[in-house]
Image (cartoon, rainbow, N blue to C red; front, side):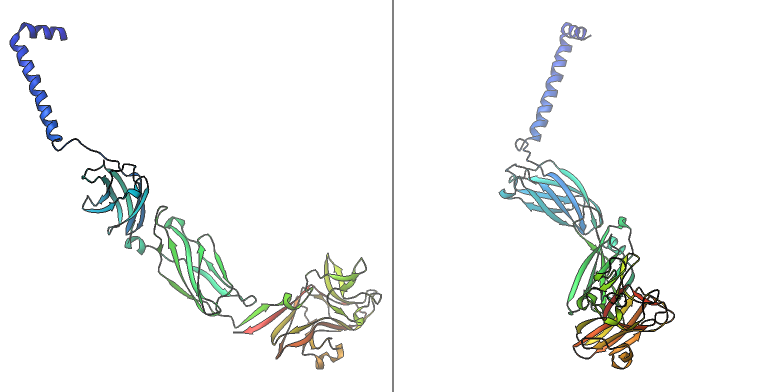
Length: 416
């Protein structure tokens, strides 16, 4: 086919001339267009911003990118809002081949498209880098709610204030709650509670004061700004008194599972760190204040079932206590009715004898109230530092009477 066309052209000189003129005119037209395009010189492209990433923020974004190793770059420009807004970032020699981070303030909330160019000193620019990011503002802020408190109280036995929190939907971006409170020394403190934690314990909270709290949000995983809910305030009512456990401060071998200083390798013994009077040693005149019972050591009074009765059986510890109000408690009690049994505190290095306790003791109570209870408490007050003997006393006939004590506790009582 091609050969036929050429043959016809050469046989018809006029057609050949016309074809040659057409080709020549087309070539000239292309050349003129090229000259017009490069009339100011050859096109000069420079390196573009590389590895660009846009991080969201509050009424702003952060743009991160690598300045390429092109030494001609002197400036970077970021355009948005259909190129109506822009930011100029001067580029120094020290920034070449390095990563830049720049914040771009944007009033409009929502998604934004960005076009980024780099320029040389002559105004030549790179090919465009197109990217996008998102800003958050008042509309997002208005939808944030504070985390709710389910309970807040000060424990009267420890002085520790606990605050319990409801959970929240993690899809909201919530990640923590900050609480600010007043400490016992009247100084302010702020602590952060992760959203996965449902309770916080404040050991130094000023009783009866308030906490202020706000919840923290990140709207997405690449946000550079944290958003906060409005601040809420919660009054935490102080208890009427504090009951602080000081057992380990003043008493030894307080149970459960009392240890023994000696025993018969079977059941009976002497409880360690406690004074056992002769009247309490009714097991072969040797043992009697300790019993190994159901796999655990207990303080014990027992009369009957083959054991003689006990008279002025005293089991106590002698300690020095500062001025204050105290509660001495016997717990895990197993006992029946009969005889005379006291829980008591007396001044000096010994408990009074059983008959003298009602008149000589600083304070006393019935050890075996009826009906029987698992705990018996004795509250007493000292006006100055005092040496006291604190414990138990009993006189019981051999009629199958007994008292077993699982543990003891000593508390200070502080009125608030």
